Image (cartoon, rainbow, N blue to C red):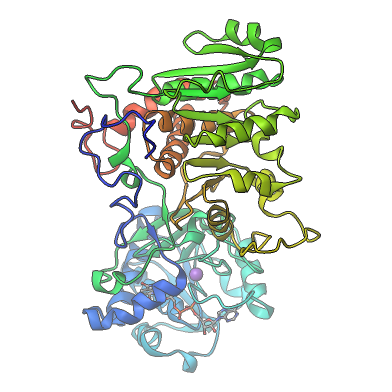
Length: 539
Ligand SMILES: NC(=O)C1=CN([C@@H]2O[C@H](COP(=O)(O)OP(=O)(O)OC[C@H]3O[C@@H](n4cnc5c(N)ncnc54)[C@H](O)[C@@H]3O)[C@@H](O)[C@H]2O)[C@@H](O)CC1
Ligand SMILES: [K+]
């Protein structure tokens, strides 16, 4: 942590700046890839949980979730050739035992079923039809047990037609593990894919349950404990974590009873000449979330407007050349933000580099990124480990996907184009630039240069409105000012931003969000995660 942070203010905080304890392998927020879950499956018998036992538990969890979601009705269970199909046979048996009318259809040859799936099919004593669209006639509910974690290629031929028939049917769909056709690792689908209303997965979620379009294809998501032994999970290094207070609450900068405003930090926001509201939104968010003081700089042409519109935020005019040396002279201004409302004026690039040269914690957003679109390496070379970049996909592409015509740079050592799914792209970008990358969207990914990756899933779609990104940038800056390490500050800000938006509901405007942060903070203090909130106000 930078020496310019208010220090020692958050007694009892462990692991500041390092990997927090909650990012452990057995955390319920860990996300495992399909390959890792397969490895756990293979290790489970030696650790005391035979495959048949896990499959029975998986089927029971799905049957329970179905009974909780829907009243008894005719069910068609579509089973595939692997263990996902095996889970389907268990579900069919348990629902029938509970009195539901159940029809089972198998995609593939019964004789080709192997191992636990063959055993589960053997325990189903009813008829098994060949899977075809006609099987869905009269179904009140469809259970998709066609393919799970084993998706190897895009569904084609009769399987593709079956998926299309499932999606065309009026009946709701419960998918086992993942909707068939979804790649659980990436959240992408190479071809036809089932649209589910409920997805029941096991043990740990996969990145594809949180990343789009996967998250939308799953419908409601349940992750069931099926008794996977810890010993089978312990060797796995999670691909990523789902954002949750457990990941960062231990370094959250709650105000101290003996604190004062300078101890809570001083955020400096560099504003531009136009889009004046953007920098004001960022300032208000920084102040609401925990900075003790916030100062906004404004070109002299905008000073009177900004000063007239802000009350607790201080506004300082910049000289005509936009030089920042005066406003940066006070080292107590310990967290910096540039980008919201910056515009594309030529001095913006200089201002960004001047902020970075201080080596203080710094957030770069919007135009602070776009002004480097023609020469991303000028920015990337200047970044340091106390920085967070908050690009949306367009800004990210301008910096990290310069396009097929971009010449490879000698001695770069890294690919010039970010490739792969959102997780891989954010992680590669963070590694390449040595800063935290917050790749925004409905499935925001927060990546650190050391490989830590978090996917956020609490952001409601109502956040897709002008100015909410400015608020987010301000939230991160405010938490940095108050002393939070940059990766955790980014995760916490994204989560609180989503929570505040969720609390506001329909019709939110960006300017509503700062005012909702106190409520979101109170909810956090009140026991989100594993804390009961009572011990958070420390002396
Ligand atoms: N991970 C766990 O903890 C547990 C997993 N179980 C289940 O086991 C499943 C994984 O089982 P499997 O590895 O057998 O995987 P699947 O059940 O997804 O089946 C894979 C089979 O489908 C074929 N296949 C893949 N893509 C295809 C395509 N596009 N077109 C045609 N065929 C295709 C493969 O060649 C393979 O034969 C999980 O999804 C889950 O439902 C449970 O039974 C028990 C516990
Ligand atoms: K499935």
